[in-house]
Length: 115
Ligand SMILES: [Ca+2]
Ligand SMILES: [Ca+2]
Ligand SMILES: [Ca+2]
Image 1 (tube, rainbow, N blue to C red):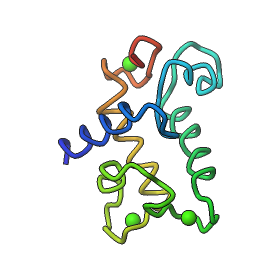
Image 2: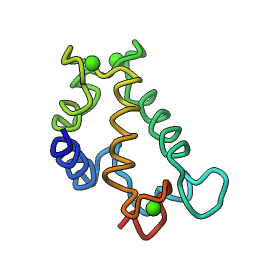
Image 3: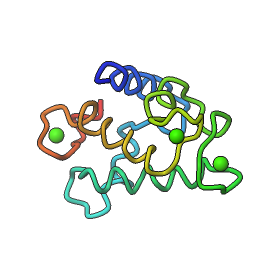
Image 4: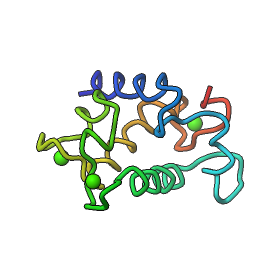
């Protein structure tokens, strides 16, 4: 499972034109309390907004058409029904936060960790 998440993290980080990409330019908009670091809550809020935007038919779930990253989709779709619910999506990003972006595991992602 850890390996799958790592692969998903890489897929997201390397897909530069993708809507789910976390890059340095995103940091200021995610850091809603402007303390210079992004908490898991801020991170999830940001990606929840993206979920709503990606859910083109507004049925509350993402299909493969709406969410283009196959490896991340597979890692996130825990019940394998070929749909990503908001719960599954948030769980996926929580794991990406902990196992991917928060390199020093202090519960925050800083600018340095977003390289
Ligand atoms: Ca949808
Ligand atoms: Ca699912
Ligand atoms: Ca950190």
